[in-house]
Length: 255
Image: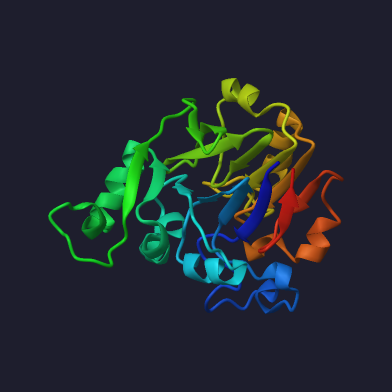
């Protein structure tokens, strides 16, 4: 059994957007208020998080998270990595945190967070991580579960999605190679990035996401990495197929 908590479901801007006068940014429906995209997956005594953006501290506090067993990174963009410094609170209780990421993402983090990875720097209180390099379609084990990285196209950079049992999480996607669809078959739950209704150069819009869902055929799909431009949660939810839903912050699912 997997317990899924949506820590954040927004784009790199979040919602409401700073300086925006878009009507959704003034919504009183909490489901329209989105922190940057991140998800918590729990099984047995394992607490796994995929991506830690600039809202990571806030997400941990409101979810009352007391433990972090591993952190997976989909790609190097700031809205998915800028919370790395906030793992220090977990370090105080647990020691170094295992992180799983591609060579490219590790190289990027070493530039931005040199003080984390430079072994010559020894001061106490800095984030402590144990990097583990992962590759597309090469499964790895974590706390009794097999995790399969599946690379998709974000146009500007490759992004890793992840499959665990009958659950898959794919954010920041514009396209996927046809030969990789087979790795996403027979899913109970797919969480898929879908940014808005209008076309976007680097992300799926609603029509593109629905076409991909039709091809994958999961039993249920929830959208994430959602812009305010998609419209009001309540309105858009009524427009989607029966097995497709808008994710929202703090939504909890069990499969």
